[in-house]
Image (cartoon, rainbow, N blue to C red; front, side, top):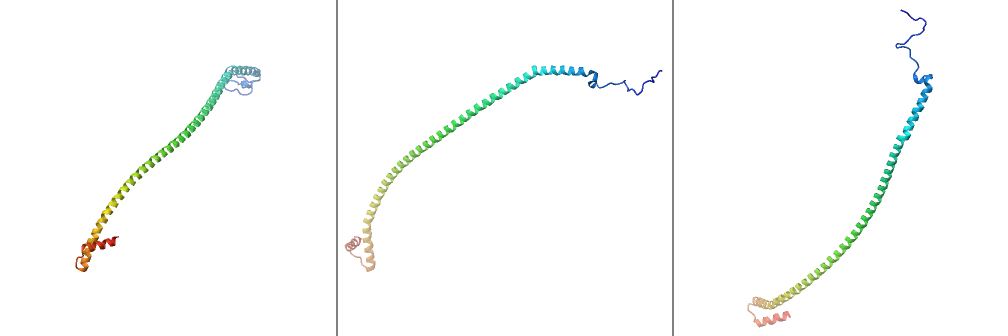
Length: 179
């Protein structure tokens, strides 16, 4: 077996290792060239394919947003017009209802006034009839009062004196007292 005695140091398992490739001075120029080529290819790919697609998508979205805002403004103005129309119709309906209520009130008041006049006329007729009946009853009662007064006066005088007075004398006395 032969051993090498001219070397100094130790050797790692698997053989000697070199410098980390990105930091190797010998390949630095080619690495920069490939970096520039990869960057240019990526830039061209993005500039010609991806960015135009993104710009188109953003433009479509911007257009859709603008259309939506315009549509919202249109709907807002339509809703404001509808609200204004509704309020106007509501005010007209209230005015019409108040006018109708006033007309109905007038009509009911006129009907009530007519009914009141009819009732007053009926009551006046009944009152006149009742007064006539009262007067007839009073006259009849007054006619009987004289007879009752004559009978009562005769009975009183007979009780006081003990003898019945003459009917003609009692009638004269009662007539004198009544008139």
